[in-house]
Image: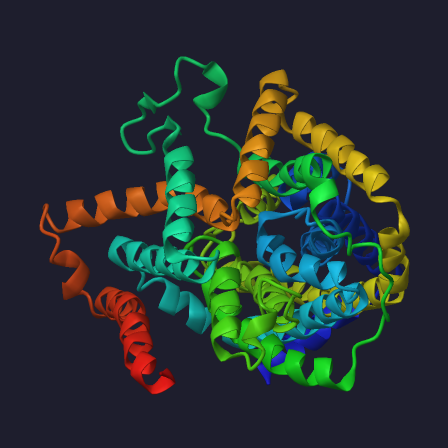
Length: 497
């Protein structure tokens, strides 16, 4: 009852005309930010941090949360239509969503992404409201062995599910792991594999790699091989989902939601891990496996997109209850709290209760606003497919170049962007999956740091990974994921014959 009364007080504050205007502004900016590659919610919120000196704390937090949520929605648009993820979180959406668009089902892909985002965001916000303190206690049980075990699970899942073969998936994954090693060692502080280039000391930006592999690589592939591939992208489609598409989507929305939210509460790789795990789950459970990687499976859009948005809400749990940011955007939001002299943590709900509950209430309002903003625009977005492809890909190159240059104003980044784009084009040409490169790059340094910390805890004894029940359970799942599928395939061969 106390939670209910506090939430009603939050709605009373969030529903004032001025705060509603801030929420609408944040959702609109966030959607635009999600569409444009190379910017992202963290950079946008950081650029708007000076507002904290002029705007009321509740209003600014509502604005920033609207940007954060809006970017999760907007990132799916260019992922589906142009195979250009605005955020790394929407990489998985691009894989099946772009195939659906190329086969005349862009409207359905955009619709299931928007509705799935709404469903996941709303359910996850309810879970945030009810279970934030309890989930924060669970997150406190995670140590370096558990984090490392989760990342091994992500590596195995990505290598096994993506690409035409496990070997090619592993090759792409190891490329990403190698790129992730470039830069300053997190523990020793020593620069490594930088080849004397100062710009590489601070590591290569994940956004740069994602934009290079997906956007620039796609454009270069189009320019070089257009005459050799069948043109399928410029077909219009219905902007509504059929009854069968609804039937296939709603279980994926729910599975993605309940998979993504817990991951947001722990620093185990952000949104990338649950979205890839969701994709793997949907591919495993689908009755239409032949659509994955060919014509595009709607479950491969619905599940990961729901997981993405559920994770966004989960990230707020440790931020508000423990003062621990588990993503780049959460870290910038923490800076905003600090600018107001507010300390996030266990006492936040007591010391700044009205502001926190207004922020949570604004998440419910923002979800409705984003659905209203995005669903009517599905038809408009689908019309992008009528634009001639050479103009479309020229625009992609322009946006990608401007977005990446805007991150650090570095000409070196532009050379790197097009070098990575060339690699992405070659990987696509020879049927190597590109998404594992991003996963390896993101999780590689984290896995290395957690492994070294775990070994320090165990005084050099690897048994530390099996002495802790949660880490041992996750590693057992990893072993089963490697051993069981080949055994099942071997058992199935005589029967098939």
